[in-house]
Length: 134
Image 1 (tube, rainbow, N blue to C red):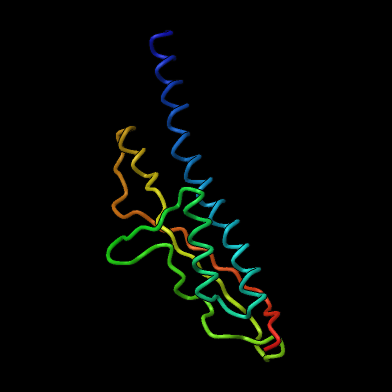
Image 2 (cartoon, rainbow, N blue to C red; image 1 turned 90 degrees about the horizontal axis):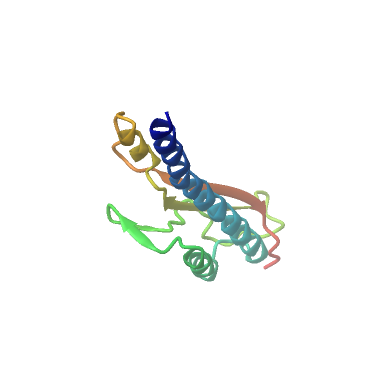
């Protein structure tokens, strides 16, 4: 009985590690995106300085710049890149950050299941009110 239970417990313990890493990377990306939103609200758009600071913060947390299928990540596609003033009718600043996510479906292969084909992306989209006057 012990020869069956002990390996099973080891597998369950170690199988949780990739899932935990997946969750933590998503949480780190969310925190950094919130910082980027506050900076973008102050200047009225997602400036190159905000993008650089965000990429630096992500690299410090282990989410280094990478390229997949010719697209450089972290990607800020969809973010507000032109200045929005506080008094504009639509004074909303949008921060969009995309980053490749680990493929946790590979764990299914260990259990005899099929693995997923394409790795996914984390995509964080946050909206805030511009605080820029000019």
